Amino acid sequence: MRGGTTPMTTSDVSERAARPEKVGGRFRSVRRALVGVTTVLDYLAAALVVTTLTGMFLALLVNVILRYLFSTGIPWAYEIHSILFPWLVAGGAVMAAVRGRNIAVEVAVNLLPELGRRIVAIIVHVVIVIMAVAVIDTSMPIVMASRFSVLAETRIPQIYGYSSLIFGFALVALVSVLDAIRLILGEHAQDKNPGHTALS
Image (cartoon, rainbow, N blue to C red; front, side, top):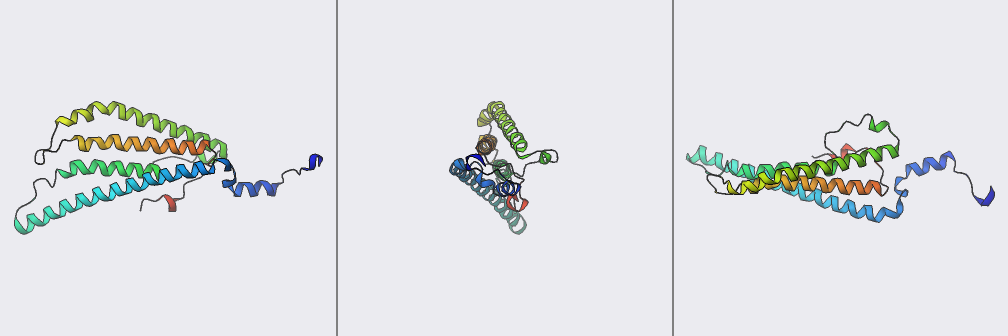
């Protein structure tokens, strides 16, 4: 061949497709760093879920034991759920966003070529960011007003529960931004492996 080059054969194309990590290799370190940040967010959300779930369970368990054995109870045992449960939901939402376990219909998307799937995935992440920012913006007046509403027994301002809304949607937006950047830098829009993304 002229210039000493050899045309790419079918086997060469197959080998390149089988090794997607070679594509966009110049941004591999950046993508790896973004994956690291996403992993930290995943562990943070998981720790939040475990902590809140454990706290609610222990409060309920102790209250049940006291009521059945000593005919007494903890007055704030039921109120603590008003603070912890929203944080449990927020942590679960972030974990679902990180692991790609959000509700999605991908039948038509999976029929697209790799570039088409990447473009669709980027658009989806942009829409998620826009919606998350919109929710945060519209909910701020309610969250700020909850400073003046306190629980009856503990006298804890309800803003401590309402602020989980800001936390959850902010991290979901951040995860989508990180995922979109990774796709722009050449990461393949591969199907999620349930074994890797399972929440249990």
